Image 1 (cartoon, one colour):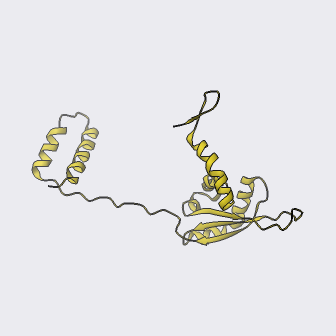
Image 2: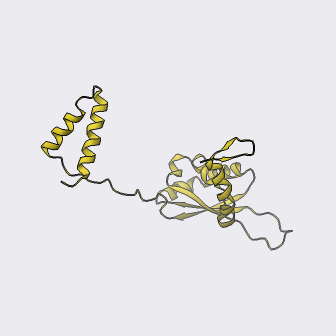
Image 3: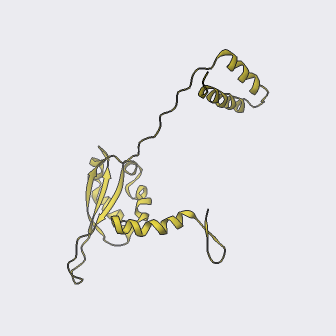
Length: 166
């Protein structure tokens, strides 16, 4: 579902979600959703798959007259990615600052922890089909002329029948 502007033009849901999440991320982690979404472009595909920006730690200012000091970017990464990240620290700082448009980051703090989510469920195992089930399946899809479609339908049928109890 998409929202509508007063003029009737649809608005992507991602834009609506960004408007909601961005202030929350800025307050809790000091980071913008744009930085998180653009992390692959900033860090490169090799590092982006095994790292993510966690938060930006801004130094405390006791008075409004205190001079501006750049922040520390906390990056979570896995194992060997920490070593690669450490070697590319200055380049990543420059890219983040270019993305933000000003010298916002002066240092990077590396936090080693799992970044990739668990791959989820394992592939289910299916029971082997009986000879009668195989012959019924092949006779059912045998009338299909396209070889690729027929093979796909046979695999689908085998999966469905293999899930069922015998």
